[in-house]
Amino acid sequence: MKSSDQDQAGQKYWNQTWDASSLPPLWPIDSKNIGANVERSLFSSMSDAFFKHGLINKNKVLVEVGCARSAVLPLFAKRLGLQVSGIDYSPNGCEQTRLMLEREEVQGEVYCCDIFNIPDDLIERFDVVVSFGLIEHFSDSTAIVAALSRLIKPGGLIFTNVPNMYGMTGLAQKILDKDVYDIHVPLTAEVVREAHEQAGLNIVSCDYFLSTNFGVINLNSIRVYSFEWWIKKVTLAILARISMGIWWSERMLGSWPTSRAFSPYVNCLAIKPKKLKCTLSSPE
Image (tube, rainbow, N blue to C red):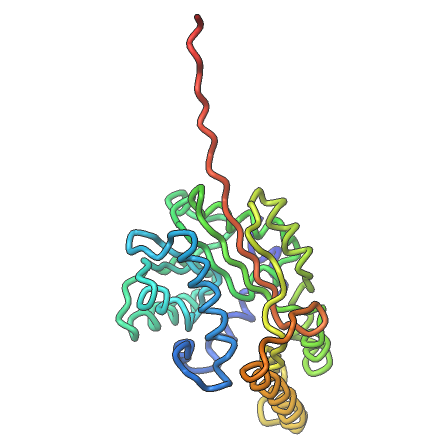
């Protein structure tokens, strides 16, 4: 099996996407700006999980799969003290990840390879595997999660974040840019959980994340500055402001509930079981 056989988008799409703009800033996890709510909340959630499982340690190694031009990978090194690596099958994306690490003065390895055909020396090499918006691009969710699991040491963690294409954000994406919607496989929290369980992982938590975020929608397939682009850009800006208004209310009144209907993401945290040691008893 190859990623190109499973990936709904394809390598050409990703190469073009990563070449379309300059390197991004890092996630603004220290910003009090309401617009940084998603990145701040997501990084805090991951940090808490890693700390709880004893993974905030300079001897622990984290790998981000689908790491192209990652705006968070350097933060795992800078803020959590982890050794970091990245894996992607887009040569353009890998080169931009190396540039991101170099810009942030962070040491790390970037492997340009197919996740379904990783080198033997990467098997069970990492303590933590993270992915953001990856598994929903593959037609076989269990197969891609199983491929990610091969990277993890027994007892290690896998953190998976996917957009909720079943909710209102998915509907808005479908209306505003169906071509982008079509490169996703809609996954519910239940399906994400099942994919991890079928891949042999033990679930720690799997649920919808945040109350809303229409800012997750993108217009990548629409010609920039066209009339259609402007109309949909304005519509998206209005939707994003609605999300920000809800975040402001959460600051004052407390968090709104998460739900399949409105939450923008599904987060899954799972553990790879430790291998059982076989002991032979001596005959009496």
